[in-house]
Image (tube, rainbow, N blue to C red; front, side):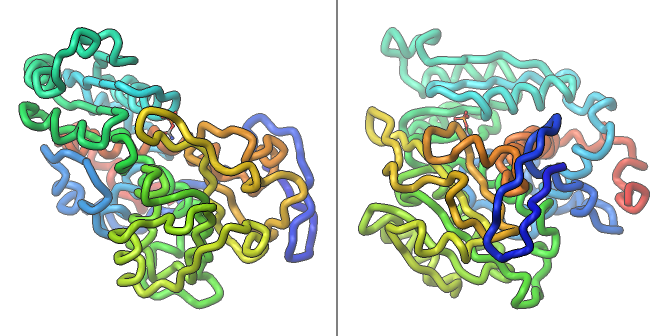
Amino acid sequence: MVKVSSDKNVNALEVKQTDAEGLYPDPTDLLEKENLDLDVLGSLVGQSIISVGQFDKKLVLEICKFAALLEATEISRSHPLDGKIIITAFFEASTRTRLSFESAVLRLDGKIISIPTGKVTGVAKGESLADIGEMFNSYGDLVVMRHTETDSIDELQTKLRLPLINAGNGSGEHPTQALADWFAILKWKPELKNDLIEEKDKIHLGILGTPGSMRAVNSFLRMSLLFKSGVRKITIISEMADPLGPELEDQLNKSGIESSTTNDITEVLSDLDVVYMNSIAFLGDSYKTLDSRFKIDETSELKKNAVVLHPLARLDELDPIIDGTNHNLYFTQAHGAVFVRQALMISVLNRFDRIPKESLHLKKIK
Ligand code: CP
């Protein structure tokens, strides 16, 4: 779709006009010959999805394979969520997460009731999240919530009896974003799903921001540790002296992956295979943007085959000039989020029986 013409290790950008900008790897490259493992996916039935800590590598891989199947086939035509009502409760602004969840549900023939802003609920009159959770029990089958407060999940769950998917809780976690991130990475480099990976195929991950207080990078880093067999090194790029905090630092150290921290992106950029950009953190009661030094544009010395991820929304840190290059994996990241969220909701709501058996035979797709 988009070509980089340089044969040098460091890239010279060549931007080509196409319908869809960026890299869109073939999802069937992620599929294997055997069927989906419904026993693994079945562990999600009736469960809430709150934290990356709930996942192991096998479960992430099975969700991504299911998402690849949904992306590559017409399974949605078998109405997997027919008769189910999903409540999307967004007490904090969102473009991608709310709309991709709602698109995912509607394409599976489920129904949506939506709170696009807390101002349209009793919160505006001082109502508690616990009481709102009690009400949700009568109105739907699954709740997807985004909130400004990290402890909002606990408060809602004091009364909620439905499964809950955390769509971002304050400076806590964003587990379905991490699934969308790794779905994009695995489509780009399917060999990363293996436990034995040649040294030359291992990747150096660069993560911009402060995982200790930014939910998307927090969840991305946690999930990256599950793929340690394919990660050569992780570099955190941040202006903060302690961007991880003690708990994440401990997990990173225990993973055995080589890691470092720098406040100078130019020091490491030309060695990175994946650059995870970020821009906005919701801290306390306001948004904080990254330091303006952390920017990728046409002057950036990206490795020839490096890819850039970004949960978006972006500001100045990611120049739109990158959109038309094959470094752009961030549009496929947002695109694939629909299928990852479909895979999760079909699993949590136990609608595997709605999928035609022949569709689960991955061999036929390859
Ligand atoms: N990636 C992400 O969480 O984007 P939104 O804030 O638009 O949902």
